Length: 285
View 1 (spheres, rainbow, N blue to C red):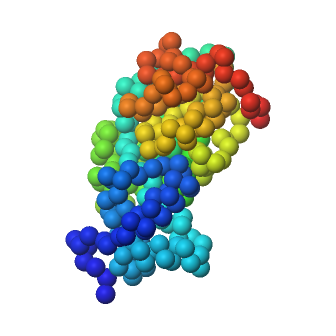
View 2: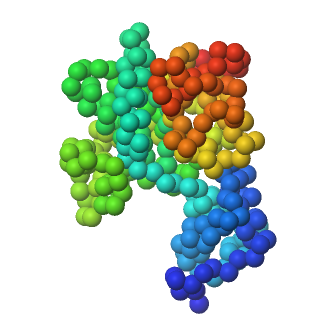
View 3: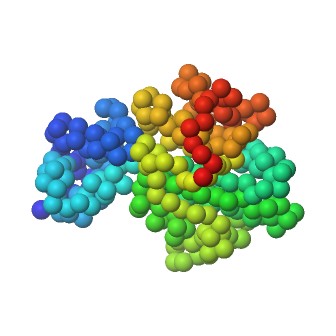
């Protein structure tokens, strides 16, 4: 018999250690000891699906190795996917200015959303620039969005959101313009979703998407990475940017004291640019 939803899941310290180590090995994300309660909350649906009562039983199945997908499902459940539409609205105002500046040489601007979660950030960008294109004829940037979680990417590609999710940061005008209702959910219109290329990517172990970018957004992802892991991620971002390109982090994140690859942008407050002394190791591809 499975446990009631309200009852805490029993877990040994060994099980907690295995699960947190799996998450860090696959994604670089860490769960601090004082936040181990997240295991209980995040993995309850998976336990119910597998008719298990404890995290120890789940770990036993993981270590047995008979189901190659169980590790993916555990990681998908544990990866922090907190996001919303137009998060930190002032950032989007500056992004419009940064893209306009990059378009001065008439080439198509490229934007990479790293750690895009369930898609609210790249969809917000697509709305902004599609509306700008409709109003002024300004070129549409190429938007590539990546995440380590295939489950999150599947939701992003579907563009399907609950009433609660759609209301988080999205004005009614844009809800009506860019989404259709399906039952109690809201689904992004195909012409919006097609403006974005979604790809699975592990920031820790994979190479960035091909080519160079003018803007790289990686907001509120580095908060969950160890100092050592971040040391390896920053040079990837630096090598992925065009000369003059900008890195955009979350409000609580910074490059200061973290890496020598970047320095604060001189044009846009809170944005970062590649340090001119940083050696390039990546071809333009």
